[in-house]
Picture 1 (cartoon, helix red, strand yellow):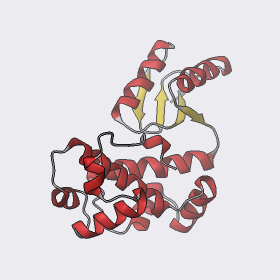
Picture 2 (cartoon, one colour; picture 1 turned 135 degrees about the horizontal axis):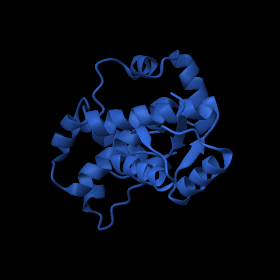
Picture 3 (tube, one colour; picture 1 turned 180 degrees about the vertical axis):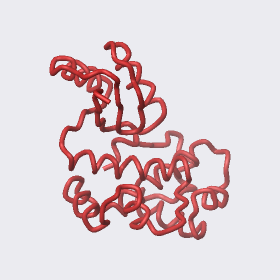
Picture 4 (cartoon, helix red, strand yellow; picture 1 turned 90 degrees about the vertical axis):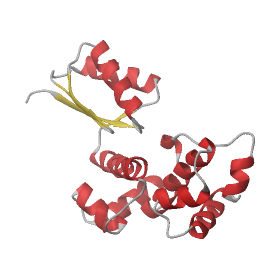
Length: 190
């Protein structure tokens, strides 16, 4: 295939995929595959076209990544977000083995790179994303705290509450009662 592969930061959901595809189509490209963090188009891009696409993506909050380290860091983030939002954080192994399998790299390499690039550990990022998902579920008001703990594969409601409070400074029950629940966009966690 003679097409072009783009690595894109800040893609966190299916709407992001649709927006990226629309931008590529608008610029005259034929998307072959588009997934979180990556898009492949049939055509070869000129430098000018690449710059136009970069500017269009940046205008809506995305960013093209060109170096291998940034791409790998973004891939780690996308794998964790997908794990939490599509699979509710359910791991059939530990996080390090899961990421090693998903990224095709030794975990110590992934961990070192992620910490250097983002200033926090992979584990801390996983916890932050998990708590953000719990905030979302609390804001919906459809599930009890026990149901959320079960859904998000916490060992207990007490574990969820303790982790939530350590990150947000308030217990889940107080968060739920607040008139304005403060959530952060997924791409702005860290």
